[in-house]
Amino acid sequence: REKLELAQAYSNSCFVREQTRHLQHYNKRTRPKSFVIRDACLILRPESTASHALRRWQGPGTVKQVLSPCSYLVEYKSALYRLHANL
Image (cartoon, rainbow, N blue to C red; front, side, top):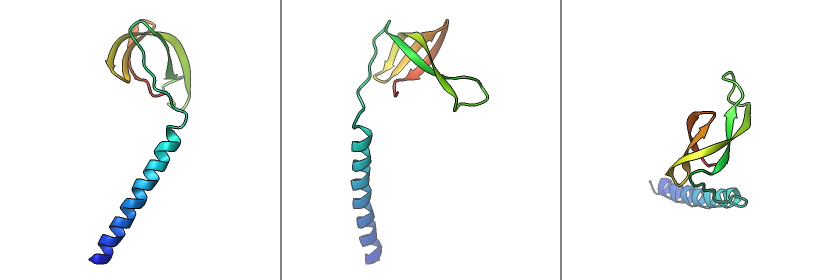
């Protein structure tokens, strides 16, 4: 029982250390993105319905509504899309 608790404590400390390291590496070149209503933005959409791996930037679209700090309602070619600003 003691060995399991010791192994769990060790794995938790390694997990926290590695998670922090990955987060620092990921956030190294990221910048916060925000849009306001009537901003122009590009949309990353699939080229076809056959494969979601093939995507192209399309636009510009127009931000119609801010749903949350990172989620927006965007109008593009008379259609509304709910998009997340993660790229």
